[in-house]
Amino acid sequence: MAEIVTFVLVPAVYLVALCAFLPFVPLIAALRGLALVVQLLVRYGNTVVGVLHRRTPEFRTLPPYRPQDEEVKAYRNYFYGPAFRDLRQLLTLARRSYATTVGDAFRAVTSRQFVAPARSRAVTVPYGVALYVGLSVGTVLAPPLIGLLLLLHAAVLTLLSAGARLVAGALRTVDRTFLAMRRLRSGMLCPHCFERVPYPAYDCPGATCRRRHMDIRPGRYGVFRRRCECGGRMPTLLMLMSRNARLQAYCVHPHCGRPMNTDAGHMPEVVIPLIGGQAAGKTQLMAAMLLSLEHAAAHGGPTLSLADEESDAHYQVLREVLRMRGHTRATQRALPRAHSFVLGRGRSQRLVHLFDTAGERFVDREDTDALRYARAARTFVFVLDPMAVKAFWTTMEPAPGPLLDRTLGSTVDPEEVFARSVQAVAAMGAPLDRSRLAVAVSKTDLLTEHGLAPARREDSDATRAWLCEALGLHTLVRAMDLHFREVRFFRTAAVADEEAGVDASVTGFVDWCLRG
Image (cartoon, rainbow, N blue to C red; front, side):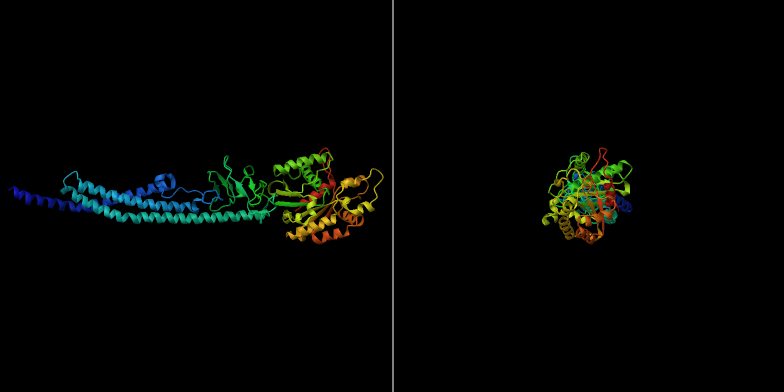
């Protein structure tokens, strides 16, 4: 009887139980497969958060990103490389997470249902087989879903990367348009080396960082903001720099690298070179021009502000010299630095560069070749000292009184200075035929004291006639008319009174030079 129960009845009952269990196998398998798929998707989501947001070491498969270009010293914009780098890390981690999760699931079923079950294997093995079926189904269904998410991620990144490049290109176009509107299509003028700078370099604004960024325009290292290696951020466009938050600009040419004006690129630039022989009165005339503008600003005219500390320091010295009716020291023979100032307000602002060059440089051809700033000028000032003309001492008859001091005159013939300087400037490619020339006859105050200056100083034609008839400069005047589109003659007196008021002749001269 016992054998019948053991070998017949028990197997029969077990088979009946198995038959009753079989309908539940698809449900168990489906639930286990669904659970595996959900588990894999949740782990994929955690991996996405870890790679894109948390960025802790366990979510890194590549070394931490660092600026690769030592000249750039900035992090790439996320959509110019790092985004696809994160996608590669996500793909690697998702593959690892998939293999680990599936392997752990199969091992857990094998251990609990087959190797070391908590109950009889007769009960756990069929259940384990159902779980195996579900895990196998989940293992097959999960990769397409995860792959679809990865493809969607890659498609979104591709669209955003393309959008970032389009926005950066559009911003560059807008920036070039603004520069063209400011007549800076070929770049800004460096006041030290006189080369055109397409875009200045800028130092990181961080308090403790001194990294210099060579090209901050929108691109791979930032669309609206650039992130320095130190973590500091800086604007990528000149138009994003407010008046009070403009970064210090630097020349990008390797032989220079010196600081430029802070206002460079933010407004049109005007270059006015002062040409003349040694002791012709260029420096005093330049100081009188600035003093005239300052006086006009104080009485409702265009505002005036010196563009940098060096220009301001030099001007304050010259200003006092003019007020004391003194004589400035000779300009140094080294290449000049521009005396720069901002004139006007709002949209009418202009950054004006005045160049006062040592008179010796207008005699030696090798020296005049170094005056590259003249290529950017469209208005030139030729300072003509009548006392440098031989005919002045032979034909002019001074009025009775103190003799005119010959040591105050220039020793260089104006015709020689003009010929050499025009030849050098034309060789540099300056369009003289489209430029204007203001001829400033200097030291009119001395000539007036001795009765040597004619009346009607404000009349250009009268001054032209005086130069031709009294001083015999017919050839020089004809050469000026030949080379320049427009020539205007002024008789100027670079002197100032105690109230910083300059001679009226300087006011009209400055207005004409800055017109247009």
